[in-house]
Structure formats: C-alpha cells, structure tokens
Image (cartoon, rainbow, N blue to C red):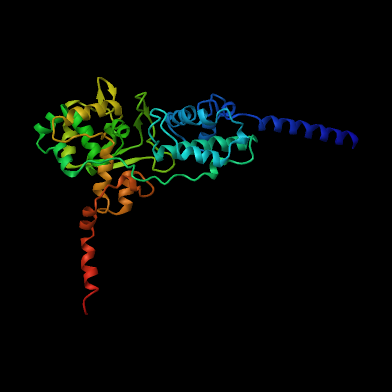
Length: 354
C-alpha cells in the first residue's frame, strides 16, 4: 500500500506539472501549422477519417486566416488568457489586411471565427484550455453581400440564337458550349471543366457528373465541391441550342473516349482564371457590361430564373443543395408579383358572396 500511495502521488505531481506547462502555451506555438501540418495525427487526417473531405484550398485558406488575421492579433497571447470578449471586440471591427482602411466583409469575419473555433476546440481536446472561447462568440448575420447576376435580356445578348453571331461573340464552339452549359445548368466552373463525353446523356438532354477540375493544379478531382452541405453529384438539363452546339463540338473534335474531357485548351483542362478572362473579352463584342461580374454569376442567374417556377425539391436537385440558399435568389418584387398572380383569383374570391 505504501508503494502504491507513493506511485500515485508521484504520478499526480507529474500530471499537474504537464498541465501547468500546457496552460502556458501561446496560440502561435500551438497552431503555427495547424491546417498544413504533416503530423500523422493532424487536423486534416482526423477530418478525413471522419469522412469529412475538403479540397486543399479549404485548409490553405484557413491557414491564411491564421497567418494574416489571427496570429498578428493573438499569436503571442497565452491560449488560456484569450477570452470571448477579446475575440468579439476584435472581430466586429476587423479590417482587411490588404486594405487596412476597408472593413472586412461579414462573411469573411464569420470564416475567421469558424477558423478560431476549430483551433480552440482542438486545444481544448488536447488539454491546453478548459473551454473554447470562440464558441461563445456569435456569428454575424450576413446581409447584402450576395453576388450579382445576369438579367434575361443580357443572357439573350450573350447567347444569340443565330449560330454565326454566337460563334462571333465566343470566338470558338468550345467556348460557346462551355458557357452555354453553365447558363443551362448553373454548374460551377470546375464542374463544367470536368465534364466528359460520358457525362452527356442525349436521350434525356442531360449532363451528370461527380468530378471537377482543380482551379490551381488542373487535375481531375473525383468529387465536386462539397462540405457536407450539398450533394456529391451534379445533374443538369440542356436546352436545344446547347445540345445542337455540343453535338457539333463532339463531331468536330472527334471525341470518342467516354472519359475524355470535353473542354481542353492547348491540351489542358480549363480553369476559372482563364475562363473569366475569355468571358471579359467575349462580352466586349456585345452590349453587356461585365461590371465586376464573373462566370460564377451565371450560377446565380440560373437559380434566380427557376426560383418560384419549379418545385423547390427540383431546384435543390439541380443546384445540388440540401436546403434553399437565399443568396442565390435575386428575384425582384416585380418577379414575385408575376409568380403570385395565380393566387390573386383565390384571394379575390374570398371577398365575394357565394
């Protein structure tokens, strides 16, 4: 018994010593490579073991938030000394590190807070702190930051029915088809770039994919963008105009390999940077002014055009979302009034004698 008591007391002293050491670690020391560490037990690998898989960019961007915002403010602080009040007071007045005179967008502030939550949660798991102060800070209600869209008139000008005019604007059939598919389906740029001959189903006038092109490496990734909030596939329907141009593209390029990519520029897959440059140049041949818009705005135009006109479950399937995302809906009051006209008769009848 005497030896057992001595052993227990010795172990308690060592545990307390280790605990006191952990309590004195700074945020910099704990999270210097939190999202990019090569450690076999790192944050990313544990995510993947839970089947939470994200693109490389997800981790690099979070590490960038640590390096550019969080470390400069809290890096030298002991982790146990950082409170929720300190985090909130700093977050609400945060400026862009690129332009210190400009307020950081609310959505960007929320992403920084989410980043802090993950780091502090891991510190809590490892015993460095007893609570996660970032969890006590509420996310900001994001308002007025949705992307711009393209109007129906602008889309008509961008994609005229006359084939000669269409090819004059886009300069090649490949580019015309690339943007036509984006118009018809609302697919993300990488998802359109990753389409193959096997993705195309002419019988049902449809496109289906489970892969995309990485925007930096140009490699085929056997999944679409997903963070657990969306579906792991994309499905879309094509208009007759797009089908006609796509069929001609397949014939002209003699595409026979079902796994072969439909869109290649000098033998390489397309990336958003290249496509956005081409969009900018192409719209100079139209009356449409880009005004800061990108190809991604075609995705917003797609949902806006269908919202309220098809069942919500159909719209969610086409967007590969699990719930309605209001930031994609750019309907005007006039659009809503027009869509609600069938209800007018029902409302009017309530005022009449039977």
